[in-house]
Length: 111
Image (cartoon, rainbow, N blue to C red):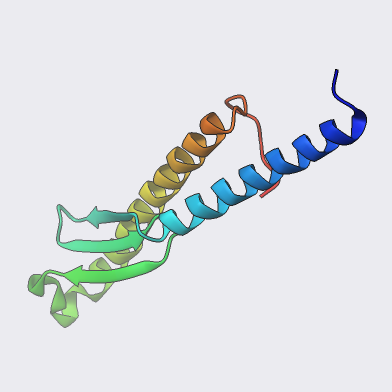
């Protein structure tokens, strides 16, 4: 049977491994790109899985002054679509890390 000191060392090593895996996953999230769209693709927003907006694409037909209100609504809708996809991609990546670390599904980590 292992001594208490050995068990504590093993637990510390496991915690360090999980922390490293979480850090790696967090850095991967910035490399994962998602795209949100609205208005049948007239407005598109690219974002990282961390939610950082990478780019915005607007169809020229929306650039008329009379379309200002519609454009504003579509930009907001496209951003929310991209944000939802970013959240889903982030959750999927974090679940991979949890499974690799042997953490049960649904267990909430403090970070």
